[in-house]
Image (cartoon, rainbow over all chains, first blue to last red; front, side, top):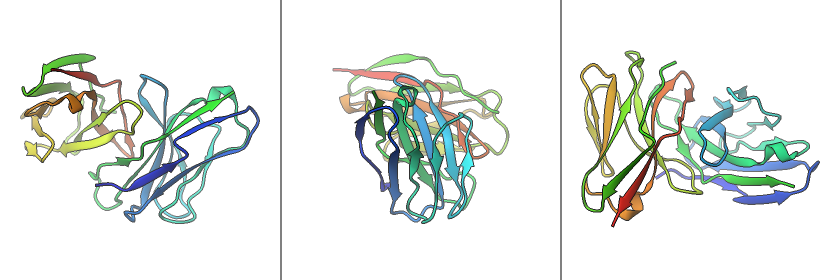
Length: 114
Length: 108
């Protein structure tokens, strides 16, 4: 069973605030990912990382930034939240070895910007 | 990029087998097929994946056609807790492309 944790699960906050969404995994996975998902819609990759000090942008343009200082930790930051950032954010991780390893997901953070 | 096509919704009677189809006609030779499911308000849960051969685990079976252009996920004895959106995914490079999936409703 995958052990990947996201906090907070729910966040309601005002426009202009700086927000950091936390994601941690205890499996020692090198690869980590952030997805954005609107209700009833597909997931869109916004950021990913191959390992420490590695970060890349995904397909979906995002105003968020990420960092990877430790293997187990991959936080996502919004410097100034706007209502358009309202969405669910999902974190995932996978092993680096082999090209066929599945991704394991956390339960997500549901973010509402007022 | 290889993409997938799934029916938007299906029903299945509780206790019966649920067979969820997926078309991936543009799949290339080294691309795996993955299945996930998502229950409302939770993150996607990994179910199974395969390349060519049929696969089975404690959750489900995956049947891949010989030409690899389609596959079927089989839940052998569906329960009410299997009600979820099921995603069939063909990985492309570093990215998993989740479509809108099949919403499976298990009926008592």
